[in-house]
Length: 213
Image (cartoon, rainbow, N blue to C red; front, side, top):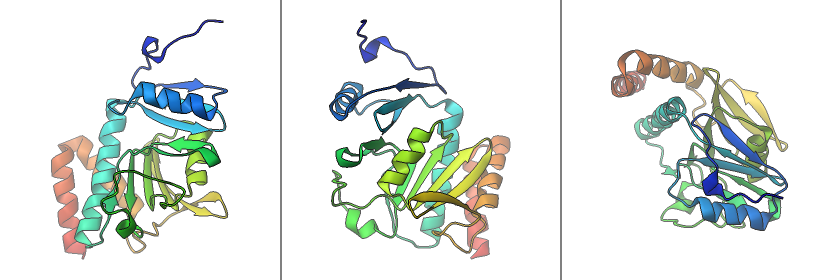
């Protein structure tokens, strides 16, 4: 049997690597070897580890969608704590996940000043964002984590998932922003960003919010 080290493997941008039959200690060892200063994202569920290398397009889109959420929260004066791509993992439930973006909103006060997570006590993020879900491993990890609202942007379309009875159901509205046309606004901002650039698109969006409110 040939044993390879992770530094011998290369995952091209936009691609993923699946490693099967990993127990929890092996998963933890791989996380340690990968380190915190890395571009890749991971998802682990039931012994399957997925390592994804985001493409420039992925990073641009996830950043813009995250910025839209931040603008909405600021303009609506809704307090939040942003945990970005923090690693969420819990051995008892055999999962690990790193969102593209995530936010504590309803539970923001609990997370103020937190530098370390203990998921046996700390709540999951209230809203997570993923661009290009690539496998069932990712969805399973979010279900086990108990994230109540998950936004998935895939194939130029945003879908909003609400956790109900341990399954995600699609929704046309966001519980976080129930009165706002989130699906249409995200599509509009991303389209405008491709035409005029990120900053002009986000400035225009902020003005739209202010005029709407």
